[in-house]
Image (cartoon, rainbow, N blue to C red; front, side, top):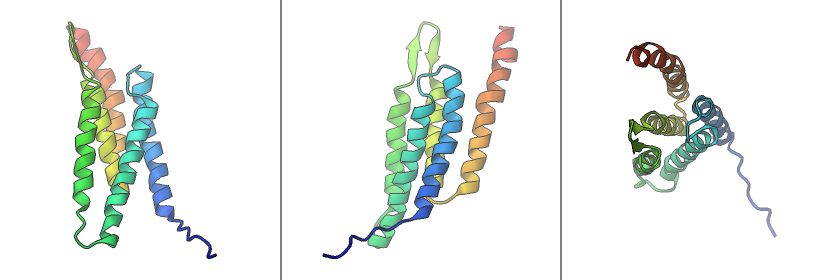
Length: 147
């Protein structure tokens, strides 16, 4: 009986590990703020998006009529539903928009990693972390503090 063929594709492993780190950075910032979608959610969204995009990109090797954009579009739609679940309307107004946006951008980072756009994924992670941390502090201190 022949040995089963095991293909080790280290690029998939590297992309998933980067998704773990990049999603973890954003998730950590949400976690320390006590938001409903935190560390684990953002890691899973980023890794899932990465894997979906890698599967989508590899479909072209199986069929010349494959459309890798369809899976990416499906991820965006699915993330929209997940993000919508974090938005709440209450007496104080609407809450959870930033959390929904952070889930959305984390999925975009994952999609970028899935097609090896490392620099774009890295820079988006850095800019997102800056937005959540520094601009969040400024918003609380200067804008909302003056009301």
